[in-house]
Image (cartoon, rainbow, N blue to C red; front, side, top):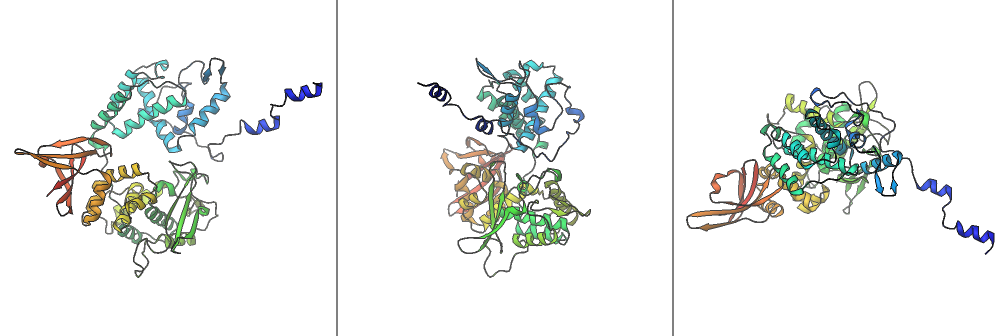
Amino acid sequence: MSEHETTKSSTSHSLPASRCTTCFDSVISPHNPSTVHKPKPYKPDLTPIPSPLRPHCLAKHRLVRWLPNIAPPRVTSVNADRTLDNNEAQRVLDVIGASWAESTKELYGTGLLVFHVYCDIHDVPDAQRAPISRNLLAAFLASCAGALSGSTISNYAAALRAWHVLHGLTWSINESEYKALLEGATRLAPASSKRPKCSPFTAAILENFKEAMNLEDPHDAAIFACLVSSFYCIAHLGEFTVPAISRFDPTKHISRAGLIITRNHNNLPVMKFSIPNTKTSSDGEEVHCAGTLVPYSAPHEPPSSTDPRHAIETHFRINHDEPHAHLFSWRHPSGTMRPLSKKEVIKRIDTIAVEACRGIARGTLYSPGHSLRIGGTLHYLLNGVPFDMVKTMGRWSSESFTLYLRHHALVLAPFLQHQPELMHNLRRYILPPCVESSTGQSSLLHCQGFSSAGSRRSLLTLRDHSALTPTVSGPVSGRENLQFFTQSHNTYICTIPS
C-alpha cells in the first residue's frame, strides 16, 4: 500500500473539522436575551442562610443554579473513565432543565426555597440535604401538613424530585410511603387552604361584563377580545396573555400573525389561533372557534354580542400594532403599546364584579383562568356538542378530560340537571354505574368515590347513605337518580335506583 493510500485509509473515518463545529456545542438560548430580570428580595419569613451553593436568582433558575453539596461540584460522573468538566455539566443541566415549562420551573423553585429554609431552621447540613433521605423528606412534608394545601405540598415534593433528577442524584424514596405522605397531607389541609370552586362563565355573564366595559377604550377592547376568545376556544387564559408586560416572547406567546381566519368543511369562517408554546407542548398548539356567529347558535339568530370575531376586529381597529406584536397588545395612555398580561385581565374582572355587578350575584367567585375554560366546556355541552368533540376542542387526552369533568362535577351539575340525557351522559363519562343492594333491614349503597382533586378512591360502601349530604340530584332516566354527595371534603357521584 502506498504512503498516500495509507494516509487516506487512516483518516477515512474522521469528520471534517468544519462539520464537527456545526454538529456540536451550538449556542443554547433558553431565555429571551433582550430581557434581563433581577430577582426580588426574599420575603422575611422565607430567607435562606446565604450559601455559595444557592445564589440569589430568579425562582425559575433555582433548579439549575442551586447545587447539591457533591464533590467535586458541578461535575457529573458518566462512567469510571469519563467525567464532565464544568462547561459540559452546565450544558447537561441546561438541556435537562429545558424539559420543564417556565411556569413549572418557577413553581419548583419556590418548593426548593421552602425546603432549604426548613433545613436552615433545623440545622440540616448541606451534605445531608441531597441525596435526600427518607427521614428528611418525611419530616419536611409532615411539617408542612396542616398548614398548606395538599397540592402545594405535592408541588414541593415534586420540586425536590426534579432537583434530584436534574443533578443526577439518586431518589431512594419508597413510592408507597411517598404516596401515603402526600395523601395524608391532603387530608390534613386546613379549610382555609381550599378555595371554593369557581363558578363558570357563561355567554350571558360575558355580556354583562361587556356592558360594564367601554370597548372604545384600548384597554377594555383588548381585555374583552381576550376573554371571549379564551371562552369559545376553551383555552387557558394564560395561553392568550403574558405573565408580565416585560416578559413577552414571540417564540412563546401568541402574536397577531398567529391568528388566521380560515373556513371549515361547511365553508363557514373559523378563527385559528397558533400558540407557539404551551405547558404541555413545546412545539405549540392550535385552538379554534367560529369566526362569525357564536358556535352552534341557530342560523336565524342575530350575532351574539360576545361574537369573538367581532370583538377581535374591534380590538384591532383601536389597537393598531405590528404582526409580530402580542395578539392582544393595547395602547397605553402614554402612547406605547403593551402586551396584555394575565394580571391586568384578572384585575379588571375583579373591579367590574365588585363595583358594577350588573347581573352578577354578589359573592360569586370568578377566576378568569379557570372559569373561562370550564365555562366554554359547559357552553358547548349545553348546545349539544358531543363530549368527545369538546374533549378535542379543549385539547384533553381521554384520561385528563375524564378527570377534569370529575373535578368540576359539582360546578357543572346545576347547569346540566335540567337536561336528563346530558346528565346521564356525564355520569357514563366520568364513572362506572353504582349498585344498591338490600341485606335484611339494611340498604347498602356501593359507589365509586372521588376526592375533590379528582383522584380515585376505593369502593365506598355505606349502610345509610342518608348520612351523606346530597348537593345536587336529578332524574337521569325513568328509574334512576344521579346524585352528588359530599362527605369529609370528598365528592361521591352515585346512581340510586328509584
